[in-house]
Structure formats: C-alpha cells, structure tokens
Image 1 (cartoon, rainbow, N blue to C red):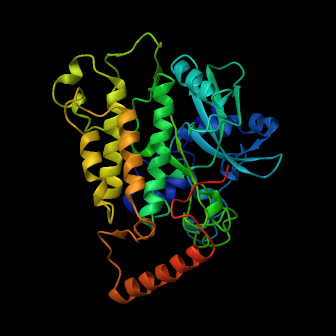
Image 2: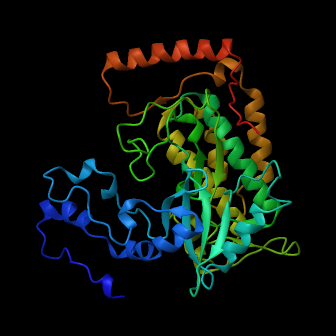
Length: 379
C-alpha cells in the first residue's frame, strides 16, 4: 500500500540509529498499523504507535525517545499487546497463517476447549478468543500476558520445585494426549505473574508501569503470590494417533540447538519427538536453574538422565514425574524454604547481607501466615 513507503536507515550514523529507528515504523509493524482500526472495532485497542495517523510524541521536543511509551517497538512481528476495551485488560494478539500453521491452531484449540481445557494437568496457553482476518490467510489468537518462567527471580528451593512440578505435569498431559511439543525451549515455558506485581507492568518496557508514569513497583515473591506456569507455542507440535505408540520422524529443529538428535548425525534420520521434549526440559533446568543458582544441586541426577545423549536410554515422561515426586517427598519443609542464591551475584557484601536478612524475616512471615513452601496457584 502507498503508505508503506518509509525512510530507510541505511545512511544513518550508528549513534543516531536507535533514535531514527523509533521515529518511523519498522516494516514488521506495518501490518498492525494497517489493521488497527479493524482490531479496535473487534474490541482490541493497539498502542498509540500503531494508529494510522501516529506522530512520535517526543518529536521536536528535545527529550529522549527512551522516556516515551510510543517509542517501544515490537520484539516479534507476529505478536503484539493490546488493551481489551471491554474491561481494560492488557492481552496479547498472536497472528499466524492458517495455511502454514494449521496444526498449531488445531492443537492449541484442542487444548483450549473442553474437555481438555478444565483438566487439572493442562498447563497450555489459555485462549480468550480466536478470529480470522477477513480476506486473508491469517488468524489471531487472543491470550493473557505471560512472562518468561524465570522472571522475577526465584527466591527459594520450593519455588523452583513447584515451577517444574507444574511443567512436568503439563508435559505429561501433552504426551498422554499424544501431543509432542517438539520445541520446548526456555522461551516456551512461561509464567502468569500478574498477581505478583502490585501494579501492571508495561508489556514492551517491563521496568515501567503500564501507564508509563514511573518504574514498576517491586514484585511479590512466588511464595507470597503463587503463580501458574504455562507451556506455549505449538508451531512445531504434532498430535499423533493412539496407534502410533513409538512415532519416529524427521522434523524441523527447534530453538534448543543442543539436542543430540540434531547434532550427532541422528538428525538425518527419523527420531522420537517425545524424547526430544524430555531433553529440552532437562536442558532448561540445567541452563536456567543449575547453572544460575546454588541450592538445587540435588536435581542434577534427574537432569542428567533427561539429557541423556542416547534418546533410546532417555527417561520417558512417566519416569520423570515419578522420580520428581520422590524428590519432592524427600525434601523437609526447611529445605524447601531454603534460599537459592545467584552464582554470579555482583552486589556488594553489605547488600547481600541485607538481602539475606530480609529473606529470613520473609520466611518467618510465610510460616506464620501459613504460606506453602511449595506455592501452588489458586484454582
């Protein structure tokens, strides 16, 4: 369309590029600008940046673009935040091609509708609504705002264990439904942390509050406001027939490039997609828990078994859940409430002492107010 012609940044000096980039829309943003009026009619209002007549609010003011809400650009061209006009809630819109991603829609909607929707072990992305874009191959999912599972940081052993208890239950449910995720990297394990924040944060600029009037207030801990975790993004997933007891096939490589099946020659031949899921979750625990925190070393044998290079020897999800439940039962309450520490804590000693003292008082408060050491979300 005629309005798509935009200035380029080819000749912009590097020190001005970030500024210039935000003065004009990127090509990835054109789609959302062009559909902003239609989405508003559907009941979803995009941020001011995507209004067809948008003019940068900081232009010619002499102020830095970083201080303005409409300077925030998309992280992913197919995903954008919006305000649901019916209640003012921030939601996520995800665009996908029905021709290219038909299986994603089928699997997502299978998990988001009854009877799967209300199953207690279903930890798949909630879907508020799905609608087709008129005259196009695209459909749009409407979903809640979720965050990466490791944000905010974990405080206790029990918080870590409850996180992966939910993840393992969710993966077990998928495998019981004969669904292999096939891309269960760290970005596809999310947390609904909305209750943890005293005020909503801005989706594109998380250190700011949603109204962009100041920094977001410090969040509650997971023990104080127990969150629910979710498995998202079924773009590479497949649901197998109950008759396919041991499926073996070639499929695209996902986000975890360390999967042995894709790195030692096995990837050129068919392989078990369920075994890939097990490896990926084990690798998430290794890279984002064991390599980052101290205090969860007792998970190492299970993680190593999940990351077994030979997929034939790798644990099945039922074995993972059984071993994990034994670990949970073996932990005393004081072990669950123990602090996990960042291995690379760059704070000064006095800051760490203050933080540790605060944790001791918090733990006492959690005990006195009957907060569970394994913080399960409300049903």
